[in-house]
Length: 187
Image (tube, rainbow, N blue to C red):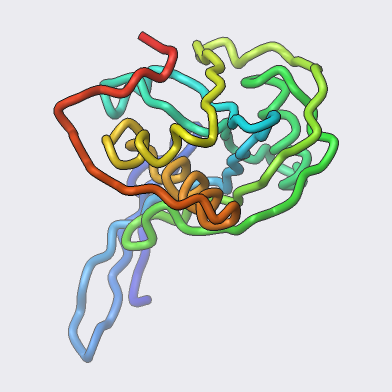
C-alpha cells in the first residue's frame, strides 16, 4: 500500500481510499471497513425459521436468516445466540458453525460466519429499536422453489439455504419463474 486515507467514519462502517501498486502501476482501491457479522439457520422440526424485514438500502422487504453484527468483544457464538433471541425468540440447544465468507471481497472487509441452530427452546430478548422483524416458518420442501423463484435475494440467506439443501441431500428440479412471487407468509 502506498497510502491510505479514511474518507468516512460511521456507526457500522468506515470508508477508506487506498493507493496501491499493482503490476508496477499505481491504482486506487475503495474499501468499506465493516464489522464481522453472524447469520443463523434455525431448524425446527422439518422447517427453517426465517425473518421478513424491510431493508432500506435495497428498498424492499427481504426474506433472510436471522443475522446481525458482532459487538465489540463479543464471541461469534454469543452474537449468534443474542441475534436468535432478538429476532426469532429462541435459544439453540445445539449451535455449530457451518462456514464463513466475505460478503463482497472486492471492496468490503465484512466476514460473515454462519451457524446451524437446532433443538430450539423459547427465549426472547427485545428487538433492536430500529428493526421490525417478523418470523416466518418455511417447510424444507419449499426451499428449492424459494431459491429458484428469486424470493431469496440476500446473499447470506442464499448461501445458508443452499448449504442446507446440500447437507440434507434435498434434490429438486429448479424451474425459475421470476414472474411469480412465492408465498412466504409476509406482506
